[in-house]
Image 1 (spheres, rainbow, N blue to C red):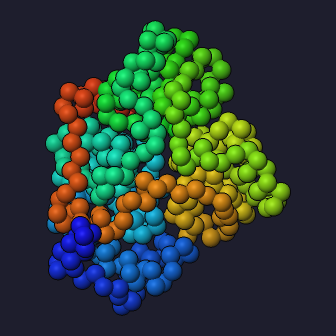
Image 2 (cartoon, rainbow, N blue to C red):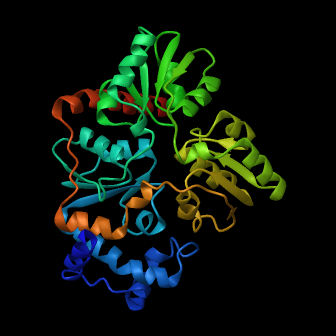
Image 3 (cartoon, rainbow, N blue to C red):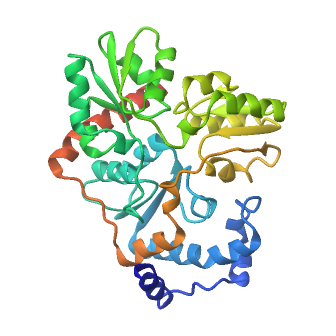
Amino acid sequence: MRDTIRERELASHYALSPSPELAAEMHDIYARMERVVAPPDWAIYAPYVAAINALKKKRNAVILAHNYMTPEIFHGIADFVGDSLQLAIKATEVDADVIVQCGVHFMAETSKILNPPKTVLIPDMEAGCSLAESITAEGVAEMRARYPGAPVVTYVNTTAEVKAASDICCTSSNAAQIVAAMDGDTVIMTPDKYLAQNVAKEVPGKRVVWWEGSCIVHERYTAKDIQDFREWNPGTQIITHPECTPEVVAEADFSGSTSGILDYVHREKPRKAMLVTECSMASNIADELPEVEFVGPCNMCPYMKKITLEKVLWALHSMSGAVEVEPQVAAKARIAVERMIDLSRKFAS
């Protein structure tokens, strides 16, 4: 019933019927995704893309979209795209009154933490994260009690309360560097046990201990899956994300963060590649790299896929889905996130 009311309200304000004519007019946008989006589907998406892009200007809004968004969002309406670190940095730089976060809830919280005066909208409040749900601030306290004096490095895929209970945040792209930069011999990593185990191999000078969390997308892959795929598809470059198990990472030709994977594929341009991560990654770069054949399998994040064009348009139309973080929690969490950003900029310089 609620979706029907939303559909009727939007239809009364915007021309949203499928339009081959509008789709043809917007071919410059479609050209970024035509290898993975069929023309009939683009005729459905184009009216929503046009309405959203017009409404962004009216609201003085920007859209931050994660690399796991579907192509029509990633290429059609996003102002800035990237992984968690890139979006966190961009959230500190945007000059807009409204940020629409096309990602999951912890990303919207991070944008709000870094921009208290701005309105931050998420098109679906139920776009959560299995990692973020796997730990609480009490869990961080438990780890501190177990390893007194050890700094807590928390993956950005967590709630504001967990970030506030931590010393510094990290993403998969900077985790090893941040762990290496921590004082002391022992470092606590939360909540992804596989990222922690993979980082421990990269930073042998530290004793890395971890919380028992994992990502429902990346934990599904097994080393046997990768071995079988190599047998069936010889010559394919296997590229993994460090949220996969260490056994899967060991089978890969390359392992890296979301941004690291993208950089690798653009640089190496393998003839055939399997991205062992979320499904939309390959779709979003397919048109940029026509010489690369992206082959399956992949796993879909059910939380990321809750974000749709219709929900984005509704968020901007109704200004609903505002994300709020309690000021005291936000202040502590901001310290952990800003420490991550500052160290990342230092590493890059």
